[in-house]
Image 1 (cartoon, protein in one colour):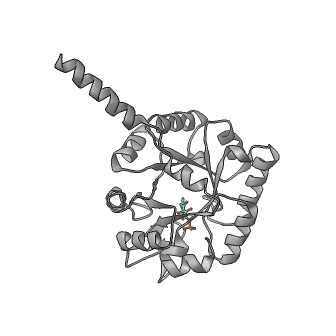
Image 2: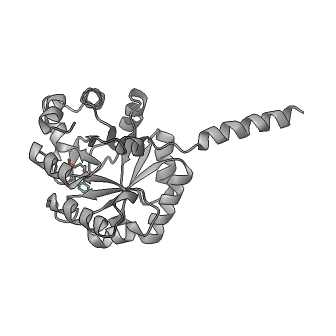
Image 3: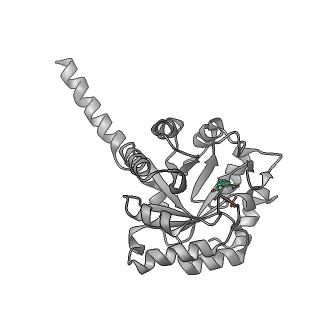
Length: 247
Ligand SMILES: O=C(O)c1ccccc1NCC(=O)[C@H](O)[C@H](O)COP(=O)(O)O
């Protein structure tokens, strides 16, 4: 009967759709430090960062510079980003795309999938433990990878009690906007002291500006760095990535 055949074909298509695909984890597993290059026009801490904002040009430069993944701010009110920019970036690249958003509800996770993101950000500071677990589990079900962001030891302890695989250590204090790479050193140390380093991919986020910063983070042994402002302000982002000595 034709309906049986159709359902059989649909089952195969669904199995292919649900096949786990972890493009960001695959990049982070490579021995070199991975660059997650961010497309960000403005931010609450810095105001307007790039007046002549051309997201696809920025993407092309990041690709040429050897970025492992692209992060796109989609918040409009505080970062002057948009979901349209993410959709355009998705169309223009095969690199893993991170939707940088303040996700607090399941509908934003579905929307991220619909927009073509590969990875979402879940910020421990704005989620209860129950919300965090639910959103993590939903992202896994939908085949999205999740970077779970922490800034304090207490947040890290909460995240280590979940199924998170990728931890983003944010060097920026989101209450007063101070930045120190010591945050990465301290929280990574906690993970190491618990004998858990091999269980996670670690990304250092925010405030990364110089070759010295990159050497420091390489010495700590992070798997990736997320850089926005420094690359957005650079007249030549390709040259800037070389200067930073990421690869
Ligand atoms: O960047 C901000 O001002 C900010 C304020 C409040 C919440 C989040 C914020 N930033 C999001 C980010 O995580 C950064 O865009 C990302 O880590 C890159 O940071 P940077 O290289 O310092 O631009």
